[in-house]
Structure formats: structure tokens, C-alpha cells
Image: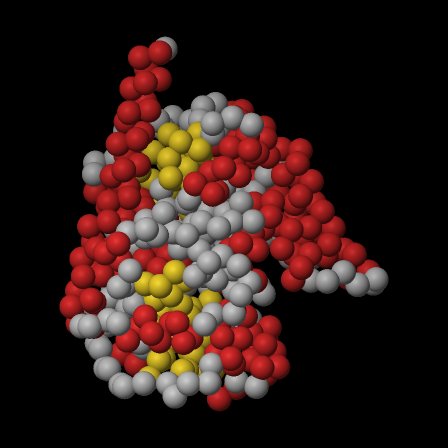
Length: 407
């Protein structure tokens, strides 16, 4: 079986999503699939070809109005023209959903019934978050920003969203929740597989546990460079501010653009309980983990109109053997009785996180070393890329046989 994996937001220095895509490609190849990535990027690169992927150059839009919107259009145009010029003939084309647009719909018509999309969110509700994160102001800058980041993306989803999904062979998604949204957009049974995020378990070291009585050091790595309300960190900040017990709670937050988070912390008067810093590399993070007691997942996905999804963070916590809390249903984790000692689930709403409840649960963990080993083993057997990609391969083989039988 031959698969081309299309990733439209690549960079020479890979971020977390690009690393995920590379892990997916390598796991597919591990099982004998002829898989190669087509990575679209605006970065300048050498012509040397990587064994796992090929970079495709996208013209970089540097100036002018609606720069971001025009850049996305340039990506879609490059995608369409590359396939038109190269005429590849794989069995399937695996693509992370690249946002709706005329040229994406045109590309799908060209690659008839070969493309399947991976959906990690409900796109329209996420676009609508812009309105909440950026209150409208009666000035030219705000008006233009609303046109670029709100109205035009919504218009493209309205005009082309259904057509794109119906021209694809099918979709896969992170949860039933997302699948319901995508099926509604397509007006048919479009999502055929709930896949979800995964982790390369062997990339992560089991944490070096340093237990300190009545200490609860928390960690969160912010990947988004925007406000990212769907992280729901306001629920954590308010929970810390509300806690009056004798435990020492400290929150370590790493990431870019932490201005909103800083304002929240200042307004609640918890500056002495929160440490913020920029990007932290993997080696430094491995060392820092010895000081961490509890990981934090996502607490605001309901603001995208979701209550269920999977996250890479939660899977990395399992690989490291770090117990964690999160605020939504996870199809791989929720309802699994053996995992209640590994993680504590809160409802997907705007309520403050109750740290009395968190500490009561945390104190119920009898052996942190045994728990860490259990979590790592569970990750290897249930959450690893090789496990997830084997499920995808089995599905694709079954699907292809059913198509051939009915041809």
C-alpha cells in the first residue's frame, strides 16, 4: 500500500505537530507501508531529500493587507499545482485538514477519492473563538482583522466545507464529538475512524521522582502562540487563587506569548505561585520533570464546542509516568477503571478547578514508582504511534478490499 502524507504547515525546525506527523509516517513505514511526506513550507531549504519526506516550497507573502489569509491561499495553490505537475498515483493521500478554500476543493476533484482528512478539532467553532479572544473595536485595524481571521475563514467553510468533505474518500477524527461535527458538515457518514493522538513512548524518559510532602508542582507546555482560550488555564489560575490549604502549589508554565496568562495571574494576585518562561528544550524539560508532581491537560475545549478529544500532552504524561488532571472526555482514557489512579478528569465547563479535590485524589496514590511504570507500559501498549497506525492500516486495507469488491 502506498500513501502520500500531506502536511501544509511544515518548517525546517519542526514543531510538535510536525514531529507528530513524522512519527506517524515512520510508524506506517515500520509496518511495510510505502509512505512519504509532502511537506509544504515557506522556509528556504536545500534540495537534499529526506528519506521520510520531501519539502515543497511555498511562496512567502511578506507584505500587504490580509497577509495571513493570502499566505494560506498560496499554500493551497502550491498544493494544487504540485499534484497537477507531479501526478502521483498513491492508494491514499493522508492530509491534516488544511482549512477550506476553492483550491482545496479543486485539488480534491483532481485527486478523486484518494484523499482522507484528519480532523483534530471542530473547525467553525474554533474560528469563532477569535471573536471572544479579540473583542471588536471601532477602528480600521480591528475591522480588517475581523475580515481576515473571522469572516473570510467562516465564509470559506460555509462555501467549500461541505464540498471538500464530500469529495474526500472519508475522514478520521480525534473523538466521536469531532466526528459528529464533521458528519454534520458533510451531511453524510464522513468520519469512518476515531484515531486520536499518540506518542512515541520510547522518546520519553521515565521521570525521576522526588517526592516532597505537601508539595504540588504543576506543569503545562503551551504550544499555541495565540491567546488559546481552549487551554482553559484560567480555570487553573482561579483554582490556585481559591485554595487556602496547607499544601504548597506552584505552577510552571512554558510557552510563547504568555501576555494574557500574565495578566490573569496578576489580577488574581498569585504571582508568587506561578513561574512563566519561554520555550524549554527536551533535555531541560527532562531535568525539570524531577521537580514536577502533576501534569495539566486541556481545560477549555468546550469553548470550541467540544466535550471530547485527545491531546498529545496527556499521552506524553503517560509515557513519562507523570499523573495529571484534565478537563474533558478522552476516548482512550475516560471510563477506564485502571486509569483513575493515573489521572483525574474534570467536566468540560468553566468552573474553577477545585484543588482540595485534586490533593485528595493525589494523596490516594499509594506508590508513585509503581504508578510511573504502569503508565509507561500502558502508553507502550495502547497509546503509542505504532499501535495507532496499525489500527489505521487495518482500516485502510479493509476499506480498500470493500471498494474493490463493490467495483
